[in-house]
Image 1: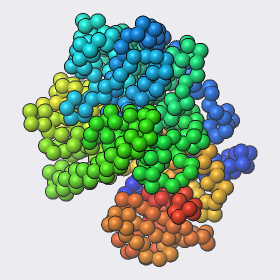
Image 2: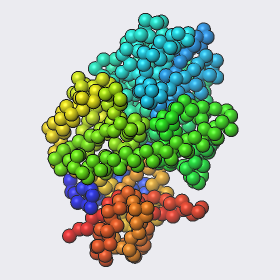
Image 3: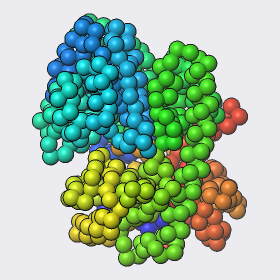
Image 4: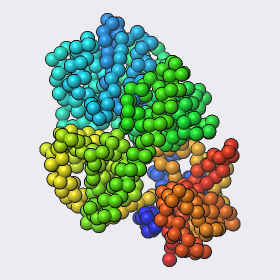
Length: 574
């Protein structure tokens, strides 16, 4: 593995591949993009054609393969036929909101007596509670279906049995050592579940259950289901491979041909003028608005927004989304500044410590996960941030790096925790504040034992070398075949050597650096987001050539489409 040290990142350089030119000619694909496929292990004829050209039907598996799915479907159908009351218990993020909306969108037309509950992040906390089960029983519900949660709902499952409720759990999070004793538990992450694809979002699991139910009824799913599946899958940042890639690709095709009013409102809010939107547009411009509801307000409004029939109400909720998302940005900036001060003052000592851990009494529980992600981007260290409550508890969100499995680490610390759940790269937890020092000590020990200094270096993987001559309209057309971009199918990052500044760089809003660069007789614009330190570095280097790690994007401005480089890092090679 050949590496190059950039201004911030260690660059993992692409291997030289002799077969790329021949393969590129065979598939009529730009050479850097053919190289990208090879770098990502997509090398066989079948894999290349499947990735680029086919509809991926083979990636879609029979929902009946999911453990307990058929049992759950039969019970829901029985409840509908008998007029029993069904409660959907969701979560406050976009995955939970879209999963809940999907249940209602699909079951209401079948005559279901159905309602939904989404917890308030601050008042209720995460997941299904015994309080919800008891209230459901008191209100005459006989079936409760969780979506995007429930795999750790042990006490609620016990209570459900006692009060005569059939609890159906649908989730995608990683189970603990045991499974709740519920009527049915559908979660492909269970070790004894035979469903081949293990990376569905919560809305994906919900969709599979409902597709099986509609199949049993001999009906077609409502077309709105594909929009909800798309929004939740993209928002939850699950790997965009296999079945997820199939559904996101088809969902994009659907909403770009049949734009719904909620999508229109979110596009207006974000000033997104493109007629054709991508998964990246959804993840960065649309779904953060829905997430702001659950982070700062009432997530239930999100369900009404997505499937309500009153356009005036949808427009009104849309205005709330806009205000809350702006407020979320301000809260996020404030917490980022506080953590940065802790680092600069040495209270968080990154020279001698491997974990970033901090907390605050006024830190919004719904925003600290976003700040933790920012810390990962800035410092490349596993990060745990906490809202410190008045009753002595710490409720936190953590984010990790690929080399360190946070879920496994928290499992080893479960004696210190009152609650935890999630995945290897992202998790939530709660514990008494008095246990925070010991948690930090254990996690530092795990990192020291498991990771090397190279593991803790911030790295970027460069997919292929490219020149400015390569980057043209044909190149952009070919790159569209790689869509949708997201987790485990990132937008390609290219190595461009021998680049020179055309003029002095510009610093925008004290955060972003914009410049024009020259190579191969061609001038192209480059923008570096959130890299203000590069402004002085580039100015000092003057006319000296450098290497550029960059992604290639289309910039939409005033109705014009221009090719632009999104700079990731620079390296002045000796």
